Amino acid sequence: MLPLSDLEISSKTMRRFLEFLKIVFLLAVVAMAAPAGQGEDVDPEDPEVQACATFAVESFNRFYHDPHVYQITEIKSVRRLNVGGGQYEIDLEVKKTQNLKENRSNPKPKDPTNREGPEVMQCYFSVLSSKWRNQRTLLRSSCH
Image (cartoon, rainbow, N blue to C red):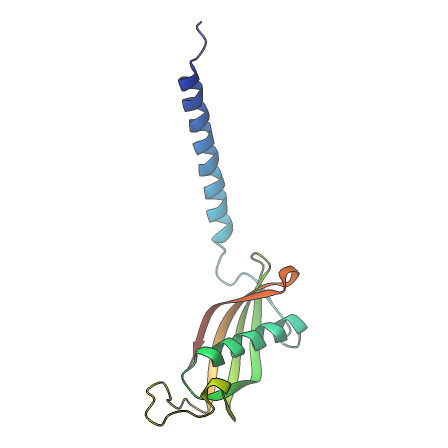
């Protein structure tokens, strides 16, 4: 039997590598396809939950059109999903304060972004927390 040429060895190696990548990709898809409701309820008084909720509301205040600052009045429920650290699904209530945002302390009356929001809102936030990196990322938010 004749030895394989360099081209045939590279082609064979490449096929094996592609098969390996397919398996890794499929395992990643299966790992991310978590069934609905997976996770665990977490105490709203947990320090990490408090930090994630505060981070989420600070982000909300930064981007919401109302010139007033909103603050947390009640954390209704929290679920933690174990994905890349801790993903916290937080349902809470926020209330408008009399405090104005720093960058809006003197808003123009005809500024189209200066719209008043409701006094109280129910919000849902999804926050990914990487405690070992002291980093939080707001994945989703919805308030009404």
